[in-house]
Image 1 (cartoon, rainbow, N blue to C red):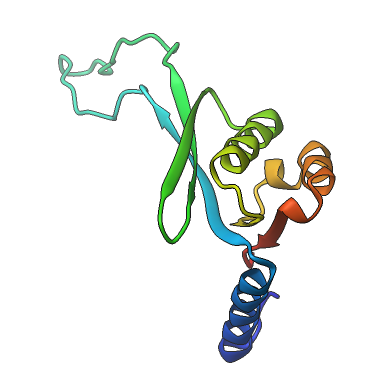
Image 2 (image 1 turned 180 degrees about the vertical axis):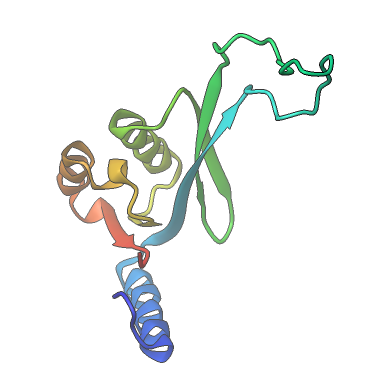
Amino acid sequence: RRGGHPAGEARARAGVKQNARRRGQTIVFVGESGLSERPHRVRTRAPRGETPGLRFHFNWKSLSVMAGITWWNFYFKLFPGAIKSPQIIEFLEHLMRHLRRPLLVIWDGLRGHRSAAVRDFVAAQGSRLTVEWLPG
């Protein structure tokens, strides 16, 4: 629904909420973020005419977090490295273990969310797991 009218988008969101209530679904907003040990840019000095340089090793570690929030609770899981399809599926399984009711997951169009593996996993869950996409 790109470029839609704000009032129409509000009605659509209200319809999603009403459908979730009628189906007994818990609405979960899901997102992810990355963390890194990479150093920040800093000022440094060098003798006149010489280029200043910072020495550090480029083998910093990265950590990603995937989280879901409901009206009542916050659920998250940490992953080493980047979040890809296997991590998304693992997080969805994590949510399903903790939330017994059927889930309506609302998330963005991240490439991993749209992958064949994630699509197949969601389809295999039937009415236990439904996905609604945020606008682009």
